[in-house]
Length: 172
Length: 267
Image (cartoon, rainbow over the protein chains, first blue to last red):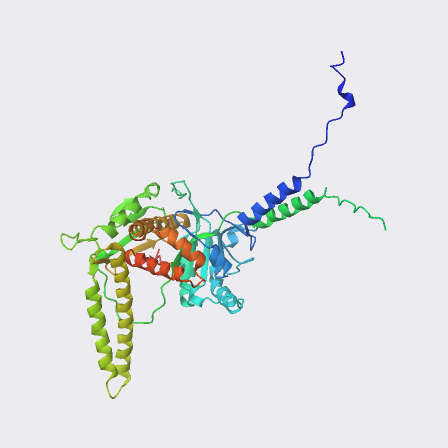
């Protein structure tokens, strides 16, 4: 019977991969649109706090009107070296004298700001990106320094809760 | 010359290049947006004048201790029940709203402005300004009074404009305005957790935004959140649409002001 011929003569046809680049480019564009670039590598561990009705800082970032202060346990090095085990990071470096460096840092940054940033001093936001366990005392120390220097806008960083209804508050 | 066939370019490595780019973007970017609660630190004032005490009914005090237990006025709220704050804050704002008698004496009172009232106030201030400026000798004291009068005129003009906007959209003749002293006072301890503090901020923000959304929906058929999103995106463009939106938002913010005083912890 010739209906059952041996398959060996016909090799499996090659899959056409010419549309693979298109698919990958599509993925690439999706990621380019949906993500934002990292400005600095965090040197502290941050589990962000949860909240509802938060403001998106993207438009402020685009105008260069926001500075970030990172607060949390250091990723490397000895935790005990830092006051209360909380390291403070301004831009790319860990602060040597904790939160008290914020005044110098902000003043320097405002003096050397790019020319296209036209916002007045009191409208430049200082955003605290703090770990959920950071005690408020540190942030209030920073607030006082900022008030003294007339940097009047601040922001408490938090992640939008979405559909979850419970906050992640530490039980004691 | 004979026509030569152009050789086909081998596109086999295109996928590799695209993958490389893709991986580069995956590594250098983050998915989560930066979101935060925007707050203002009050300007420092150099005055030794003793401040007149604020009436207790105008303060809504929320305190968080180092164990993340919340005290809102006289009630204790456990961390897991934090969402109860929402209705309490709304109650603080709304209990006396629209009432002229039988008011709850423990909560802030409302004032009721009307176009006539603001117009007469404005005229009064303008008359005062005219009288001051027509004086022959303008000494330092008079100059101060003139400046004050200018400020007052500007203030009443702004109020009148807001009142007219409110009357136009609501059809009502009186605008309820909460006592200007009414505020939420947020106290914490030195070692209160950041997450608990932010959770309270979130509840306050949510309560006020929900009230604003409701009011904006009734007046303009659009929620305050939507208006704010639009405004934040288009803030730098100076189009008439953006300006009207700003006016509308200002009205809603006057009707439901978010006044939050954050007190420096003592212990």
